[in-house]
Amino acid sequence: MADNANKESGKMSMADKLAAAKDAVDEAEDVLETDDLEEFEEDVEDTNDETSEDMAEAVEDEADDIADDTDDATEVAEEEADDTADSDVAVAAAVADKPEVSVPAFTPPDRSRTTRQAALDAVANDEIARKQRTLKYRIKRNKASYIMMGPYFILFFLFTVLPVVMSIILSFTYFNMLEFPKFNGWDNYIKLFLNDDIFLISLKNTLIFAVVTGPISYLLCLLFAWIINEFRPKVRTFLTLIFYAPSICGNAYMIWQLILSSDRYGYLNGILLKLGFINEQKLWMQDANLILPCLIVVQLWLSLGTGFLSFIAGLQTVDKSLYEAAALDGVKNRWQELWYVTLPAMKPQLMFGAVMQITQSFAVADISINLAGNPSVNYAGATVVTHLLDYGSTRFDMGYASAIATVLFLLMVGTNKLVQKLLRRVGE
Image (cartoon, rainbow, N blue to C red):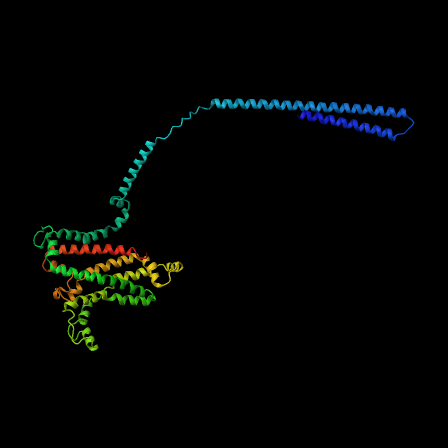
């Protein structure tokens, strides 16, 4: 294609030259008007000859150039063909030298084997999970923590767990502390619930104490702690000391003996007689109908103890930003803040205070013994603990006393579980 284009361009250039020559002749014929026609014709012939010679030489030069270009293109094509042949040979040699790779045929997966493997993996995972739930695995994994807590565990086991277990075992025996314990089965429990009227009275008094003083003292601790927490630090410290002092006062019973004295010199009788509420003195600790209410009042006065301090500490740890977030969420007053923000933020302290109040309300004994005596009038002030002390410390019937202690232990555990269930709903 390149050669044909060159030839066409050469022909076009020659035609142009011939046209230019003819135009020059015509112009010469028109312009030149001379008498010497022969000379003019000779000149024209000479010009035509020279033009023909020039055109021939130009055509020969262009033909030579086209031939040279054709030879060069031929040589380039031959070289490219030789290179292509060499590359084909090299590729063929490389393919021949490359080792053959066998492609395995597609085989569908064995679904039965996959299912079997999944079942084995599930069984293995269950076994691992079961081992991780064992106490041995947890001890091995948290060895350093258990070593650090070892001394407390030893003391707790020796002075709490072991006595409870021994008491449960001794409750099925007759043991007077002089002879070896003799197994008597359920005799102690049968006697306790069917033949011991004093135990039934003391159980009734204990349940009244627990139902009345437990929730009321718990709410009073929380209410006073919430109010005191609003004061400045110095005032808060002073008020906390005033409210907590009765629970650690060793002479509190002596003060209440003066207040509840049955003669005219008793503080309560003197005030009521002077104000005209009564006409004669009241036998506060000798009247069976008044003993239990008086003991409940004294117990409430002494109830602001460790639980009260735990509530004060819990209120100090509540994040103040929670109240701002609650206000944005629609909390409008302080009671809603208490229910939706404060109490959920101090659930650990609420649980600790509940345990302390349950233990305190079920373990009432010193108040009754110091104010009403043991035994009290018609056993009006008797509790489970006073009945336990009677058989354990006075009669030395340790098997029967252990049965009473076991019943009291079960009452405390059941009440504690109930209170924990109720506290989980705080803030809902």
